[in-house]
Structures are given as structure tokens and as C-alpha cells.
Length: 132
Image (cartoon, rainbow, N blue to C red; front, top):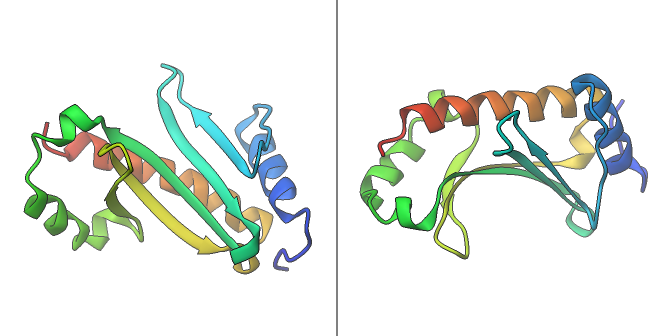
């Protein structure tokens, strides 16, 4: 069963927290997850007026991104076997992020949890093989 109620985002975050065994809260439509080293693991943002959920993670700071070749980043985006439905973007501060988006109405809480945890795994892998 897909989620379509106004509390779908709260249900998803509660289910994810239960699966991860940590308390998670949703603030202003967003939830931040950090790894054991206090580094960003995933930022989850719900956009209810557009029925979208975005998950993203910073891979390189703006200073580190400036050393990367823009054409190389675009070539990496074409490798969807590695990126698994996500793509590289530069945020408004020029930091390199991995990002994915899906309509909330297509997700159940189980699919949401699988999607987010899968993204976190892909993000770790992409971070490991990105050039420094």
C-alpha cells in the first residue's frame, strides 16, 4: 500500500528510525542522518506540495570540488550502474552532492526505508571511488 496521507512523511521517518534503531525527527520537512564519525550520511527532504522526497549527501566540500574536472563529474553521472538512480550535483555553495528524488505517493514505509538505506550505501561507495 502506498502512502498518500498528510502524515506519510512522519510515518516514513518513524519506520526508518525503527529500522536503524535510532530516534529520528522531522523538522520543517527534513531529517538529517549522520554516521558514527558525525559525518553527513543522508539528508531527507519532503516536498509535500510537489509529492516529492529528496535524499542527498555531501561528498566533497566546495574547496575539494574545485579540484574536480566538471566533464569528469558529468561522465560519472552517466554511470547509472554505479549511481543506482542518483546523480551528482553542485549545491548553492558549490559543494558536490549525491542526490536522488522519488514521488512520495509511490512509496510504502518499507520501500522508503529500503530506498534511503540503499542510497546511503551507494553514497559511501561513490565517495570511496570519486577522485580526490
